[in-house]
Length: 167
Image 1 (cartoon, one colour):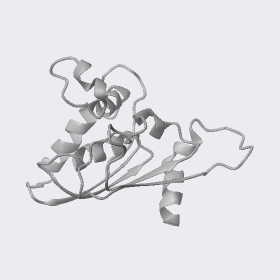
Image 2 (tube, helix red, strand yellow):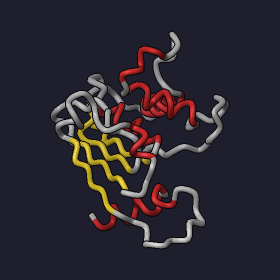
Image 3 (tube, one colour):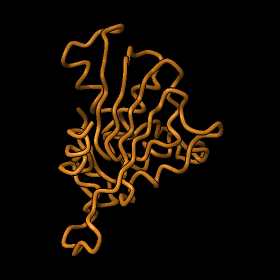
């Protein structure tokens, strides 16, 4: 499991799951990827997840089920697209993965709430539409006239867990 954004500032710091990492991760799947500065091949969160896999003793060929929420969903999609990893399936909970280049044969489930802005920041799909084996399930989660006490209430992990429970 790969958690979502922890630090919402736009300046890279000690926290790997920050907004700069999100920008790198989404840019990696987008046509404007070539515009990034030289040497910026991936976001810090992606590098941290790969380091954690190595530290845990994961070997090439070991099956991986990549699951992530928000920015972690983008990283899960990136792992699924990596031909050097044996990602057997992936799950995204509210991450912006529409243009992720997940290869055929890798089943990928993307849960997206209709009122959640975050999945829309990934665009509307790659040049040929979404990945061929990506199943997108979307549902409304907010009650009409909800008071809006939370920031991005449809994006909360708790609401995505409720959607998962329904599945």
